[in-house]
Image 1: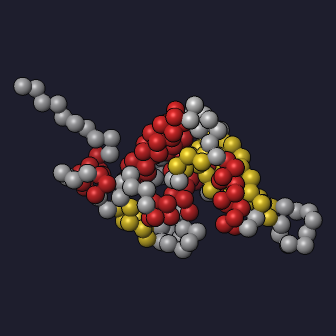
Image 2 (image 1 turned 90 degrees about the horizontal axis):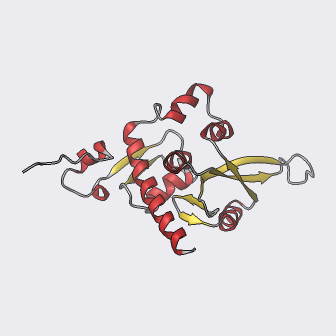
Image 3 (image 1 turned 180 degrees about the vertical axis):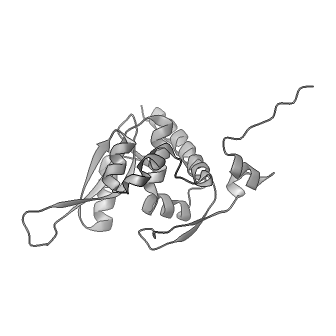
Length: 192
């Protein structure tokens, strides 16, 4: 009898899980910069899209998830920008600041931690939440995304190639990316 050793795509998470499913592993994520809602510590379970996962990847580390989605699929990144006036009375000088990022599916939908949504729905959701005009912008490369989000040049290559991202973080976001891509592929196949 020949025994084949199974190699997990997520070896650190698999080691933590032991005999349990990955979804039973609790991963505590501590953030240096709080999420939009002020959270600095969240407990996630790999592949479980719950309030903690939505808070982390919808309101804090969306660029990390978008990076994983983009690298797995090659789909262009989709930047959500808030358009505001520096002074409410000003008629010139609109400012754009990025608010969120996901990827654009082949059908033109945005894929992020919330799943697959139309761009119109994403714009409406952000406009309602921030009470500002909202636009979306496709970005074909991680380099352009990095430029827009404004991180330091020292981090650029390490963020793009992943060497500056903790391996456990890479595995955790990878589980969510794989799940979301599979769901998006099914959703788009059904809607054809």
